[in-house]
Amino acid sequence: MTLQTSDLRPQISEKTALLEARGLTRRFGGLMAVNNVSFSVQEGEIFGLIGPNGAGKTTLFNLMTGLTPVSSGTLALNGETLTGLPPFKIATRGLGRTFQNIRLFKELSALENVKIGQHTQTSSGLWSGIFSSGRARAEEKQVEKKAWELLELTGLADRAGESAGNFSYGDQRRLEIARALALEPKILLLDEPAAGMNTGEKGALTEFIRGVRNQFDLTVLIIEHHVPLVMNLCDRIAVLNFGELIALGEPHQVQRDPKVIEAYLGA
Amino acid sequence: MLEFVNTYGFLLVTLVQSALLGLSLYFPLSAGQLSLASPGFYSLGGYIAAILGTNPGLAGLRDALGWWVYPLAWLVAAVFAGILALVIGLPVLRLRGIYLALATIAFVEVLRILTLNLTITGGAIGLTGIPQYFSTPFGYMAAFLPLLLLTLIFAYKLERSRTGRAIRAIREDELAADAMGIHPMYFKVLTFVLGATLAGMVGAMSAPFLNTWNPNQGTFDASINYLAFVLIGGSRSIWGAVLGGILLTALPEILRPLKDFRLILNGLVLVVSSIYLPQGIVGLFQRRTPKKVVRGARVEVAK
Image (cartoon, rainbow over all chains, first blue to last red; front, side, top):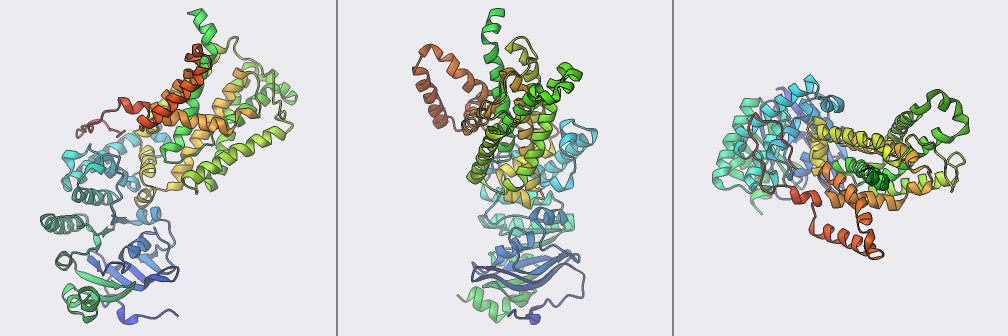
């Protein structure tokens, strides 16, 4: 029943793979939203995920972060299986993400959004918070400091006290990245970070993503529709169509792949 | 002054009691969980205090402890309510929104029917002649007021802690909180247990104060009342629950000179405030401009 798509296996598996997906599959009733997708992501890579609308890109992200349970297949980070874990545990293991349809804590301030992102990096419990134990206070100071640093990095520090919901689309997307970075993730998953941004903002975003990758030693997975941005930014690109992986390789290879041209550009 | 206290002592204590019960509903609501279970735990706490105070089998304990039976009842009620909340919360808090509300109403009903039929709870008559620990109703302020202050301090500190942030995150967007590494079930159950423990303690304090305890202490009506405290007061702040509890309990008394019209006016106040004050009464006092936060300043909490 399940097809072996060994020909689509990434070619560079001899290098250390940080993240390894094997046969990830998700069925919604009769619909194969994600069908037997396998790939591996190298450490430090910026890995693009493109495909037409409804190709299953976001579903793939949801499978990877545990928000949608897989029908079959596995995902491993440094050889440790992530599939089957609840989202909060996957986040703790080092997968930080943003959402296509922005899911900030809209009524809370920008500063607080980024503070919440540091949940996995801190540990003080109920009672040490209630009694303001020395450790809890030290931790709070640290959380505050790092939140400001991340806001500064994303250029939102001067509006730290404003509710996240009042921010422009582009600023909300950047705030979401700041919140995800607060987790100190190993892998940052960005779901259409450039959506709703103007051309200038998109250019700045490319530089910004490269910058944080270098600064935080990140590996980045990015879903993006804007082709020039993806081609320019990504080290490798995977192309999904109707839930299946139809191409995987460096941008210039993918760009010339006839299957990609047919699926993505031809229509 | 003394005359005022003698006349209104009972009402004044009831105001504080209502504020506490509003808070017991506010805790789960602060994590976005619409739980109406508080009257169940309140009833349970009251029965524990009533049984400790009247059950013939426990006469020896009462003789040995004297007045200390009262605080012992608070403690036992808190522990029982907390454990029961944990057992019930784990399955029930998987439900969301209105389904959670229904399940918690069902819990209150089950407990009411149980107490209506058990011998140890005195059936429909309930338990009467619960020993008094203070000579006047107003004396019970010595139990209720410190509990209210402690609860407010607790809630205030909680809001400013890591745990409080996680709770707010779940209220705002449970799925996003989950993706940020926050265990939603843990914090939802935590707030449910906190609310239940508080309601249990308030019940244990209330049984001697009211002198009798019967199945009507924990009813669906009470659930809706406590919910009204929080919603009318303001569901996004600890002060909302307190203010709502005090105002909605005082209002029917203040309107007493209006005789039969008071219920109409009381209802009108509820309707008007729920239409025109979506943020509750405390919403009137909240600033509309964003708070200026300054780097290095004290930790600020939005809303």
